Amino acid sequence: MRSLKSFIMILLCVLAGATQASAARAPQLAREPFAPQTDTMAVDPNDCSTYTDYKRWFFDSQAWWQDKNQDYFMQEHLHLGTCFPHAQTVAGTVPFDAVIKLHNNPGVITWVRVQIYLPSSDPNYGAIKKGCHGDGIVCYDPQPPLRCPANVMDCTFNIHLDVDTTKFPYDGLQEFRLATNMDMGNSTVMYQTNGWRAYLANGKTVKPVGFDSTLESVEGRGWHTGTNYTNARLDNFPKDTLVSGIWTFKVRLDKGADGTPVTEHEILIDPNIHGMSRGVSVPITVKGIAKTAPYLGSGPFSGSVSIDTRQLTNGVHKLMLRAGSQISAPPGTNSGVIVVPFTVQN
Image (cartoon, rainbow, N blue to C red; front, side, top):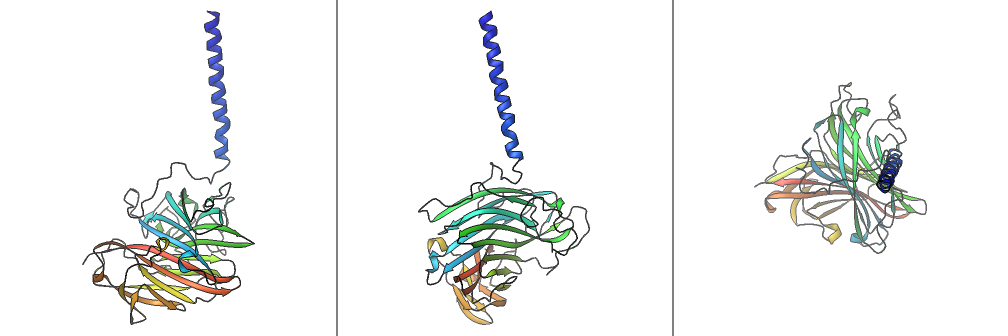
């Protein structure tokens, strides 16, 4: 009997110790409120139907850096893509499963942030910061920073972020910005961000985003030390509308805030840049002039682009827009890129 009692006492102590150890570990998560969830789903870029909250489309914003005389396909890439509820009405907490990709990029990811744009002149600016970068609603600061393994050209990180939109002071059409910051060494920084729009409906004052306040645009932005922002924007994403015949849309491929002049712009259909392909050959019209994609033009461009979708197979395709700014210090080209899907039905 004494042996049985001793065994039970030992067992209870072990269980109590395990419970205490578990309780002691739990605050580790509490002390890192911006850590990603470990059950992040692997997002299929071709299928956002797994989300049942809102209609979503997979957008991919990218920042590129090309050293002077570096091969086009070997420049450094930083991608962030996710299934985004474009122009949908959202409320409460909106989950995002972000897919971050690096290509030939030796830098380290120091933080990931989601913000909803609010100008610094707004009296509510900074009220939602709560230790997050800038006016971010939620941030992830990986420790240690994320990087590709040595001698690996391409790598992917999946990160889950829950965005509590009730922290934002206004309703109406707002601009979400999902950004990834990289330390490239030698006091050089590279990051990608974007401007993706949705309507908030949390029972607050309706005050749309303060610029292009009715435009349901999709924009990718690249930032690099020496150039600041370079932006690629699609003004009229077709959503579920099937495109056919000659599809015409408007773009803005130009510098962003405090950016250096854009020296080139590019329009590609179904590219696989990591696989060393600039995409398929398709008749397009740029500036009213007949061209062929893959298309590379000089300087900035804002205006209409037309694609002859009859030269494409029916089904889902990708449109890639890029604006690039070449500078002398550091010598190279910074690019902002946006990639969106569209569906052809002829």
